[in-house]
Length: 253
Image (tube, rainbow, N blue to C red):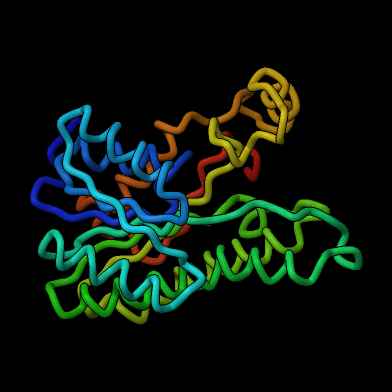
């Protein structure tokens, strides 16, 4: 590992499981003080304990990214507790429901858009407000190869939300590059994360279902996704602005 994030404070939404947890641990291993946020206190506490077991520094903030007051408090608490905010990974998201558009439940549609898209908007809004007054920073949003880069029948809500994240990333990047804030996105495909696995499905069953659609012949590892997030958040990607980096084993090639 490197020391790319020593002295930095990193905020990860959706940090209680999957990509968010893995990214939070990776930031901590490279020296960052990490704040993980989400709605499930037990899962967040487990992430903090995993980081501390590796001699990292972490804390948690309970917040619902669909609620403006929660997001404002999440950022304010991070700054008050640790003295700043330098890096943000806006990762909180939901996957379903899946149905043909005419059969899609309106409440389900609204929930997906609220979490996946409005949650990223609100998170960036308050992160940027702090960063532009304190020397800048980097933001990485989690989009998806579905919606942003490929089409999937039945994925109207999810795909639309993630296409919106990718577009929002590009416009925000141009809006705020003069503020010293670099904003990019990562678009994972199928990976070894809970969101890629159906309820009751074993890992072997999941892999058998997904790998025929992946030219590389396997699902991605969490380490591969988090390495991409950390690269986008680090000075190593300093010329990348408004980019949406697809990591899906060739599924959208």
